[in-house]
Length: 626
Image 1 (cartoon, one colour):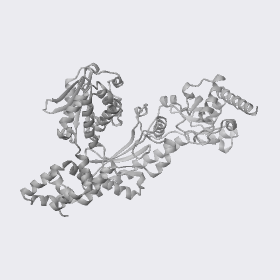
Image 2 (image 1 turned 90 degrees about the vertical axis):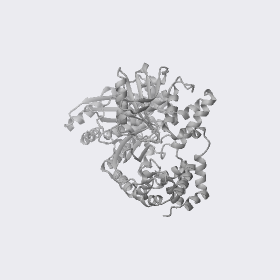
Image 3 (image 1 turned 90 degrees about the horizontal axis):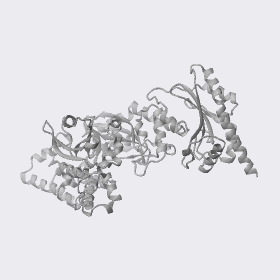
Image 4 (image 1 turned 45 degrees about the vertical axis):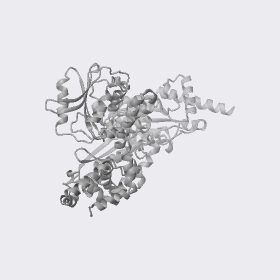
């Protein structure tokens, strides 16, 4: 490969290079002051924003939103459970006594970037800011030990590792935050409160968010331009970049180039430096994108696995994909919010970790709360561990699987491809795929989504333990006693279900459900459930009829004395358990299971509801006849 000034001169004739250079060198007064290049200056901006008493006139908006984002990030879920600080207070607290300290020196001579103290809340934030930098050995341990030695009077200490791209901290006590969070908080404020922000402050924040956006928001057009330039001008880009960066000498692929650099004259070297410095941002970006082994390895991985192009995205930092079969899940789990990855409620991605391992992650995305919680419960029933905090209202992202592997040499594409294949073909990964499919299948047939909110909140879910089943012989004998036709029952080991002729007769007036529900699509259904405490439970449930017809049935049942919760009357309501009854039994005795099924079905409470449904059917038929 030829490395020469002639190859560099060709960059002047590249439209793609000129377009990138223009993008990265737009006027911004903060760039003139080089705020964008130095971590310490970003820390100064953050200190200014965090202090409610500063002259930005934002009050406690920024600190409140930062705490909110910190508490809602999926990476921090485990830490919330042990938090003494009542973090819900950030919504309405003024934080007027908040104090921000910069460059706090520890006893070992290191400096904490930002120390935020809120005496009224007994809260201390220890913020380690990493903007284009990596952590030093032992520094996080030093910072947290220092804070704990100073703030010992019932203070809650929250150490925060703030990075550009959600790098994982080496110390497990540190919470994760990144500059995308900072950008989101400031962008939202600028959008919603433009008129209330002083002009000078608004202008400053606009320029600052532009700097963050340039670092963080990598649009496909920009990436493609960089790839095009690198493909046509790789010798020039490599020569300019590596002439100023000795840290790549350890890679064999650059041995020849460094040998050539050593043979250059001082004037030649000076010329390279001058050219590089005038176009540094552009050259750095092209080199970073062009030599991105992770992206190139992922493209090979996707080709090897035969993924159609619409099922993956070769992102520079987090290449992502879905299994082609997952497109069938959309009807069951719904679509996520616009802009989420590949537009699917589940996503898989690779990333390079801070300690140079390859990580594979599977995540449930921001689908509608009802569908998301149903999916999480279905996954939980398959033995996938889900934190209870993931089911809180407003949660959007839940990572359900992480797996890691070592990469022997990140400069060799084939090594990275092999690592991707190891993670993808790992038996644990394959097992997770099967459990996801099983969970969605259970949702599709109503085995999970129709459980009432009260049951979901109180039922003890045993994860990672094989779930007991209801004996098929007992259920089929019960069905035979009721003399039900084959299409009137469905045996699922955990949730056997059935309907009776009365329910079908009701369809003449009220129709079937507006979406697939169990395997019957009937207005009402019976289903058995084996509880975690080994009781047998029978439920009768009203399903997702069209809202007007559903409300008509509910109001008729209420007039006859049945108590129904108000939320069941909402147009969005779909599932309402009208009655449940349970019985402790010996599951080893199939005859006892069968007898208990009959006993539950013949209980007076169920008979009363069936009488009400019969009256509703007859009255509806009478009205229609008249």
